[in-house]
Length: 312
View 1 (cartoon, rainbow, N blue to C red):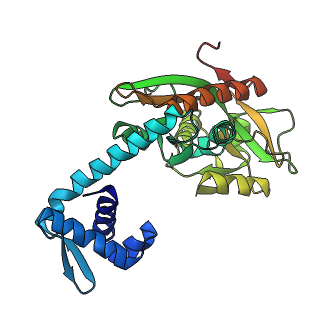
View 2: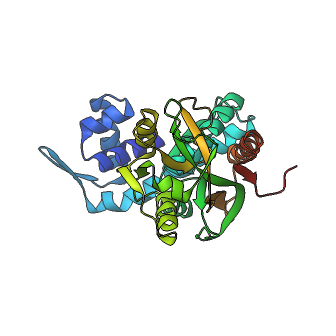
View 3: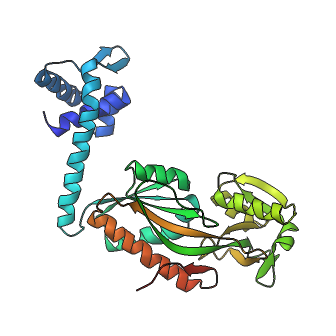
């Protein structure tokens, strides 16, 4: 039994098809079939029920599948650890982040990390804060950049939480339209402008709606339910204004931002990782890059971004 045989077995089991599995593995189908047949001979048991157009696991295959996955994961972990001993010339980092952070802080982080460690593979998982905490607890990511507002804790087992920045929410408009002239706007003034609102799945949409309700105001929605990229495109084309985190309009000359006052809304960006898992050298290097990039962004926008941990 060898790793190539196990890799082929897992691919066929997951895809239910020899041809698709061979394509995924970049392996000729006859070679894959020979690997599986040899594995079955060595184990003394058939692993698949083979019927025309239908491949399913036998009882022996069902027993082997979770063990094969663990063996392949262990082999990958060994490769990563050995590669890191060579000085981060190879390796892998799995980073989770919320959608709004992916188009701001994370974009800067990945560029800086890739420049410093071009041989390290980067895997990004995008999702909401709660989903990312679940992914972190299950070992699907090495660390996650999540957000919290109004002091709400980031839940999750055995997590280390490092607050990075407190970020104001700002109002963005098209640089050409310029409906806000003095650099700030209060909630009452915002309610009078056409508003492009994010989908309900965004935490900051909930925070904005709650602020309007608390003030007894009704926003003038022109479009609602869009994802962040679409919201920014609509604003760039002059359809209306939008409430977004302060890092979003950085380096976007087609947008103009104004501070939101009375009330001032903000959120905290948090870097989370498990306390019961020792970080690889690549993961430790990624954490350092994230912290330094957060400091850099805060220095560029001191009015709307505020570090919330000691800097060295």
